[in-house]
Length: 588
Image (tube, rainbow, N blue to C red; front, side, top):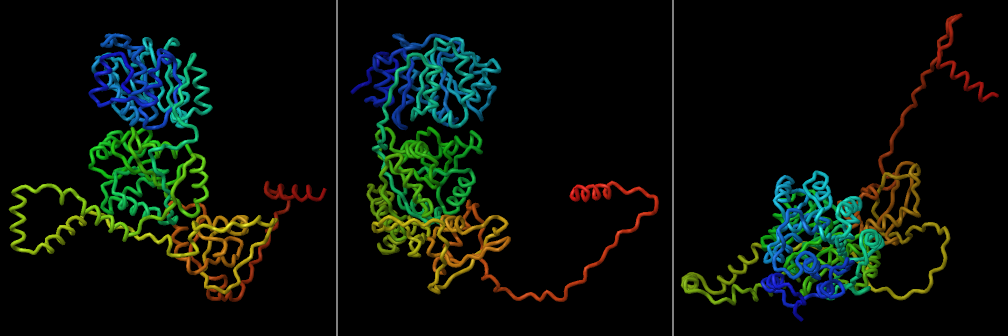
C-alpha cells in the first residue's frame, strides 16, 4: 500500500529513501481523523515513529504548499530524552523536509551552545533537542517559541523516567496554547496520561502496540551461566554468532570492565555510556554503523532510541530492571521488518527473577547453555567453507600468484596456511564450566512435588554425611545480628549453591564461619568474590579452633591508682561536682 500523502515534496523525499509501504503507525497518523489534531501515540520501537510524526506535521506547517514559508522563529519543536536520539531525529527530519526547503537545527547537551545560538538566530523551521539544553536556550532568549505551531514529545516515557518532568512542563508552558501537541511513547503509563490531559486538547489516542504480545520479529533465548562466568559466556556467545551485537549493562563500571576485557581478547568493540563526551559517543556509533566495530557495550540511558542498521543481536549481560527496559533494549534489533535475536544471560541466583521478568512481558524464551569451545570451532569451520573469499571468481593476478605457490608448496600446505591466516584474527573462546559441578545445575526439570508441610521457625540442620567440606568466614557476627535464617539464603544466592551444600555454621561475636561442600568450594569462592558482589564479604578460612593454641602467659598485675587528696579549703572542680550530682540523683 503506498503512502497516503498529498504533499509532492514529502512524496519525493520518501521515494528517494526507498519508502514504498507505510508502517502501521505511519498509516494511523495520516488517517483523515488525525489531521491537525493532538495525538497520543503508543508504538513499539523500530516501527517508524520518527517518520510518522514528521509526516503528521506536514498538514500543519506545509498544508498544500511544496515549500515551507520563510521564517526566523521555529514552527516545530521536537523534544527527545537523549543526545543520540535527538541527533537521530534531526537526521531523519532533515532528509524528509529537504525537498520542501526545511531547515532543521539540533540543540543537545555536550555540543557547542554558541554555535546552536547562531543557527537559531539565522532562522529555522524545526528545532530538535534535549529538555535541559532547550530550557537553557529559552532562558537565555536564544530560542523563542512565539510562532511554534506544534510540539512533539518523542519517547515521553523515558523523559519522565529520567526526571525531566519539570523541564518538559517549563518548555510546554513557554509554547503557545494554540499549538498542536504530539506525544509519542512506547507505553502509555499513568504519568504519560496525566501529562496528556494537562497539555493536550481533544487528543486522538492511537495505540499500535498489541497488548501482551512481544515483538514478533525477535527470537528470545535465556542463556544459563554461572554468576562468576558472565564474561566468559558473553565471549563465547559473541564468537558463536559472529554478528554485529549490542551488549547492555546496568552500570558504567561494568561497561568499562567488559569493554576493556573484549578489547584485550581481540574483539573490535566500542563503549557507550553517559560518562563519555558527545564526540566520543558519536565516534563509537559511527564505528558500529560503518562496520569498523562489531560489538558495542552500552548502558540503558546511552542507548535509548538508537537505530542501528543491520543489528542482528542484542545481549543482556545484566538483567533489565523491569519489563519496559527489557522491551526497549530488545527493540534495538528486529527493526523495520528485519529479524533479530535477543540473548539474556541468567545466573543461577537470578533464575527466578528472569522467569518473572520474561513472563511479565509475555515472552517465551528458549533456555540453553552457552556454546562450548568445540561448538565455536565447528561454527568457525562452517563460516570458513562458506566464505566468499573461496567462492569469488579469482583475478588473473591471483591465479598467477597461486600457480607460483603451487610450484613451491603442495595444495594441502597452502590450504593449512589459509586456515591459520583465517583463525589468526579470531579471539579465543573462553572456558565455561557451568556444568562442571553437577550439584550447581539448578535448571534441570524437577518432578512435581506435593504441598510442602508448614515449617514455622524450623531450625537449621547441618549435614551429617561426613562429606569433605571447606571452611569460609565472613566478618558478621552476633553484634551484627547474624542468624542462619537470613545468612543461608544469602550465601546460596550469591554463591550459586543450594542449602544442601552448606555444612556447619559457627557464629561468633564479630565473625561467622561456615562449611561449603568441597566439590563446589572453588566455584563458590569464585562466585562470591566476583566483581560487583558487595552484599556479603566472604573469604576462605580455617575450622574454628584449628589455629595454633595461644599461650596467654601470666596475667599482668593491674596498676592501682589513688585520687590525690584535695587541699583543705580548695573548691571541687567542675568534673567532680558533676560526679557528685549523679550520685545524688541515683540516691534520691
